[in-house]
Image 1 (cartoon, rainbow, N blue to C red):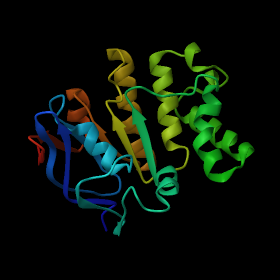
Image 2: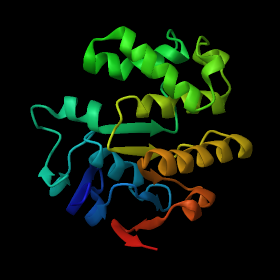
Image 3: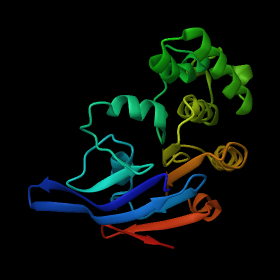
Image 4: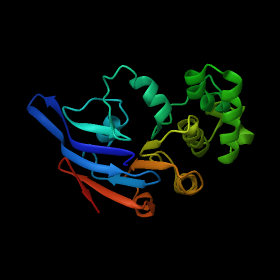
Length: 223
């Protein structure tokens, strides 16, 4: 069974000049363990698609299925679903400035379980895996861009999500730190069989993923 299946997904926005059709009927499938890259020009709708898949926005038409079950952003338990089943990594890491790296990573698990001690223990385990454990007591403004993004990846993984969506995860990083994040994603896929769907302009990331798509004129095409 597919981990994720998308059927005829459409999304448009109203503009002063009329309706802007961003997605014109997107269809695709994700299997467990896939590493998928979606590329395309700026404004092509890549981030919009990712937000729909992650239940952060609603589509105009179409269906999204997780493990064969249809789900949409208006479902009663969508927040719980999103917290437990889906991980997000954004271009801007959105770490909480008043929390340490360790606390930032622990927060999604704490929200899900209300068990602070367990959340901190699991946070520390992930920080060790991601080679940033020695920075666990540092605040975001004390971390480099690459370190902040590693913390963001750890936060996305804390609840063992079925799938991680990454929106330009290296967009604010230099070449060295970009390569570190790419290598980290590949490592997590191999060691944890973690599923990734990544939207990016970075062709180095695209080439290293095992499935590649181009989003063009609102349609998703396999490369």
